[in-house]
Length: 245
Length: 238
Image 1 (cartoon, rainbow over the protein chains, first blue to last red):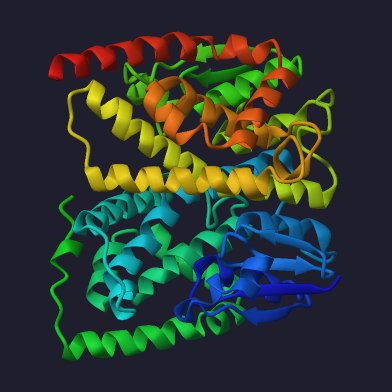
Image 2: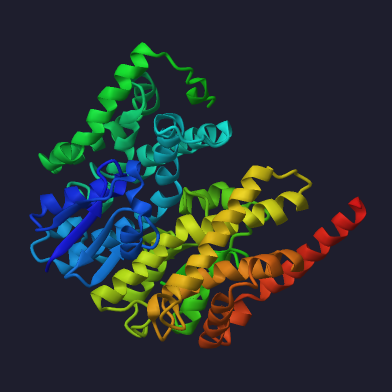
C-alpha cells in the first residue's frame, strides 16, 4: 500500500503518526505542509484536506483520511506487521485506548498546545493573542489534565493501557505534552516536574520508540533552543503563567 | 449481570447510548445521574467515573466512559448489532472514527459554548463573556457549514453512508440540544440555513423511531420550560 503522510513536525499529532510509522517499519512518503508559511490553507492542500489541518494520510492515491487517532487506528489494522500492543484486539484494552484518546481531545489537547500557542508561538509569528484569560484557563486545564494522568490514567502501570508496553494512545498523548518543551525551562519544570509518573512515562515512551522519537522531535528542540536563547536575552513577563492553584 | 448505563437524558452523549441500546435490543439498567442537580459530583458517582461526567457504563467488572468508546464497545460486544452502526470495512470504519474525532473540537465545542452562553448563564443570572459567546458561535457556524458541505455531501447519513452509524446518533443528539434549548430567534438564525443538516436530523429520527422521540422526551419537556423561563426573564428586564 502506498502511503503519503502530510505533516508538519511542529504539530503534535503529526509527530505521533510519523514516530508510529517509523517504529513499525511502515513505508511512507513524508510531505511537509509548513503551517508557519500557511501552506495548510493553500488551495492545493485544501483539496486534500478541506479542514486545512495536519496530519492527513492518502492511501494508494485514493483514500484520504484525517484526524490523527483515526489515522493511527487505520494504520494499525491495515498494515501487516504492526505489533498487537499498539492497538490490542482485546475488547477491554481497546476500549480503554478509545476512552483515553477521546478524553484527550477536551483535556490535554485543549490545554498544552493552546498554552504554548498563546504564550510562545503566536507572539513569535506576530499573530494577535486571544484574551489573556485564555492562557490562564488553559494552564488551569493543563494542571487538571496532568493530575488526571498522574492519579488515574497511569495508576495501573508504566503505560496508559497495556501496562508494560506502549499503545497508540501513549505516543499520541506524549507527543502532545512534548509541545511544552517550547516553554522556558523554568516554566516547563514548574508545570511538569510535580508529576513524577507523567515525567517517567514520557521517558519510557521515548525509550520504547527510540531512536525515532528523538529524530522526529529534532525540529521542536531546535526551535526550543532558539526560543530559550532569546528568552535569556530578552526577559519577558510571563506572569500569566503563574499558577494560582 | 445486566449492563448498567449511568446517564442523564438531558446529556447529548447519554441519549446516543440509550437510543443505540434500544435500537439493538440490548438489555440494560438505566441509572439517572441528574446533571442539573450536580449528582455527577457525588462521592458515590466519582468512584464509578472519576471524571464526573455522563455517560458511563458498567458491564460486570468493566467500567467505561467517553460515549464514542462506549458505542464502539457495545457494537463489537453484541453479535446482534447490525453492521451499519460500526462498519467492519476498514476504510468505512476509519471514516466513522474521523467524523467522531472531528466532532469533539467542532460541533461539540461550538454547541456547548453557544448553549452555555445563551441559555445556562442567563438562566442563572450570570453575565456571559461576549468574546467567549462570539467565539462559540463562530465555532458552531463553522462546524455546521462543514457538516452541510462535507460530512453530509455524499449520503443521507454522515461520511456518505446510506444507513446511520454510531456517529449519526452522537452528532444528531448534539444538534437536538441546540434545536430544543435555543430561543426561536436563535434557532432560526443559527440552524435554519443548513437544509442538509436539518434533513439529516429528520432521517436519523425516522431511522431510529420510535426510540428517538421517546429518549428525547425529557429534552422536549425541559427545553420548553427553560425557553419559557428565559423568555419571561428577558420580558421582565425590558
